[in-house]
Image 1 (tube, helix red, strand yellow):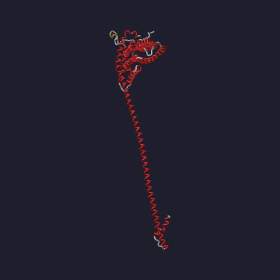
Image 2 (cartoon, chains in turn yellow, orange):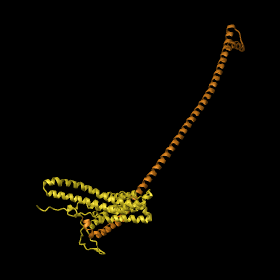
Image 3 (tube, chains in turn green, purple):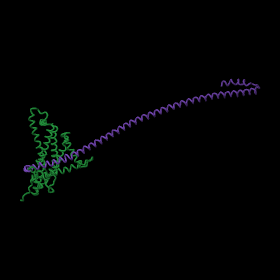
Image 4 (tube, one colour):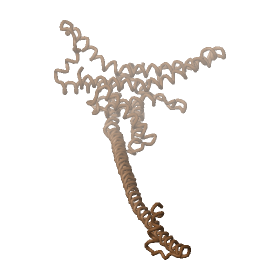
Length: 261
Length: 164
């Protein structure tokens, strides 16, 4: 029996240095330009291309300008509902965050494998999403302490807490606050990774089943393929939702810093 | 799981490039482009609000014009009505005056005519007396051969005439 082709569902997440940049370094730390960095660059390039279509500044917008304005308007209203009038100044940051993650998620779903390229989703790495979540957390800390000083700690004591409960509630709230950067970064990373692993596993079923003869093809490959189509649609949804959730939670955390309770 | 197995070798590169590219996104897109897009939207909303306000003002002005016009129309209608009523009244008064004048003039004419008739009648009767007196004189001369004086004849004739 011939050796069956092995599909490793984790291989897609491998980080590989490109263009012989393995040994690039700053202060002794390796900064190889990896496939991850390449897809970040592609996301930025696409995003700049997309948003520049919204700079035509016409009174009656065309489709492209309308799309960009819908996206900025979406982020603007998200901040307006979560943070209120103080949220206006965070629109550039939250818009960058939302659109960067959105473009990254969608780019990773483009079926470039059909033309032999290796699609890659950098949001499926917690080392990448962690940067974004720690930045959001830092903004909350900086804004919170700059705006409210030590009064910021009252965030950990909700209104109406009975006095004997304050120490306990303070600890619980503090832990839940400190967990935020982890939950924020892990949520995106896990959602993106799980979807891609699932697709890869299902595709390995399709291939293995196809190699295993007509019976196996019928009972394993065909249902798996149909399921894959559905999961692909689901992944498109998840890609959008996770970008939205990341931006929305950032808004909610910024609201805590801006308005306390 | 490459996320963990490669972490030691790649974390710095990941963080570095993430900061670089997210920084680029924030500076170019977030700081550079988004405010312009938002400004366009704000300008457009402002323009629309101004246009709507201008339209509303024009509509209000038009409605005020229409109201004042209809008020003027009503006033003019009322004054025209008054004019017509006055003219009718004046015409009626004039007609009545002329009718009264005419009636009075007719009355005087009738009176004069009646007086003339009476006079003519009297004159005619007088003429009859003369003719009768002459006839009586003539008859008395021919039949009785009496020469009756004119006054006597007239006195004789007068009696019957006096009784009409």
